[in-house]
Length: 425
Image 1 (tube, rainbow, N blue to C red):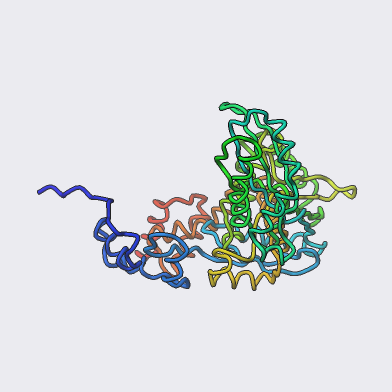
Image 2 (cartoon, rainbow, N blue to C red):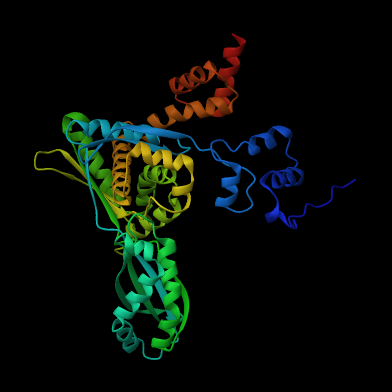
């Protein structure tokens, strides 16, 4: 007898409890009891809270949370919570920070806490004149925007400026209004989106056009986080290592194929801290990659140079729209604990720490590439994952992983053979 086709049209699914949804999914997918039990265990996040954070919740996905040590940022020692599933990410930050700890660690800064909301108007008959009509109404725009969020205004934030661009597109001329808003300790998406929505009817009235999009930009180039560090030659292995690292950076600066992987490595560290603190990883990643292409060609988010004393100088600059209030950052208990570990009391400090982590991550990647190759350290850690995939448990994991590294082949079939040998012995 043939099995009837599965049907994903499940009436009232969103109104079910998480457990009812899980049972429904289990029946649909043929999950066994062990799989259902795993999904039903929401770990340190209450199922009820999870059900409020996103839609159609059936469980949670636990990600390892590690701590990077040795970080000294602006003269202050800091432990860095990092949520990631990838081997060697946390270790890379620890190693980079250790190698510049005695010489001062990292210094950092932030350009400000300004976000941009965009309002798109089309069908404007006289776009250049309309641009001036909008700019002439700055005070009226400020009143509308600041009226949307009195709490933000009370915290010292709110409307700061308006900019208007005449943009030529494949669909014709568009008039794009930018609202520049200081969102203080919030990431700010909800605040600036509300302001753009509120102002849209006025933009239509002043321009005679039709407003479509009114939403924030994740290219937060008024909110740039910067970090810098110097690594002495005797700490990193001498001039040959330094020159190899600079050559690796120069490759990324000149070639988008290399820059994509170079910047992905930077984001390994950055996204891990952003996630650990309940912030929006996708927004930060989008802003970073857009910023890397701001000059018309995609390049490196970092720079490496030689100081007058011959040491290695590294720096990073990228948009960093993170906050301490709102969303999962405020609601998720683990995110709140991670913020306490970091000891941050402002979004500015959090952004600066995250930038320093990105620079540390990149230093370690470049050093590995310029010396032993990226695989040696990464695969040594990854070997433990492979050992577990092969079925190793307890002390077997370390023994199988060590054997894989010694053989120079980190593959599951080899791990299975080694495990068989161990158990046979």
